[in-house]
Length: 123
Image (cartoon, rainbow, N blue to C red; front, top):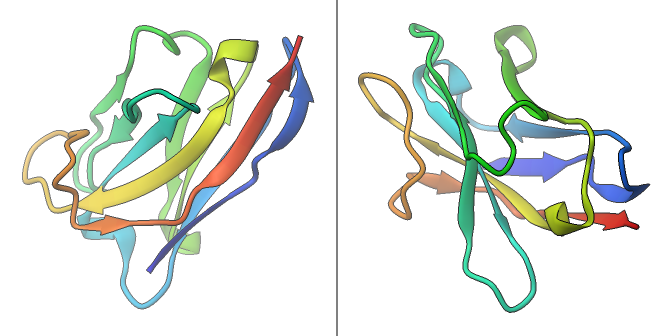
């Protein structure tokens, strides 16, 4: 089971750190992706990180340079550090896990999905 947390209300240009924690299995072997869905919009992939054996990361153009994904294997947790937040970053953020041999991905066919956490950025 995956659980995303760390969302909240923040002013524009502020920061938040989201956490994606796993229970019942270890994240070491899984690539992890962060997705978001704003009201009235389709879900979009934001960032992903390869399994512990690799070092690949990916960022959508809309968050490149502002967001950073990382993993702490000892805590079985993946983080999404979000800086310089904009009102257009407002959405429910989800994390998901998938076995991906090389690199990472952001497809709808991820193996596990967590419940989302709301991020609201005020102007």
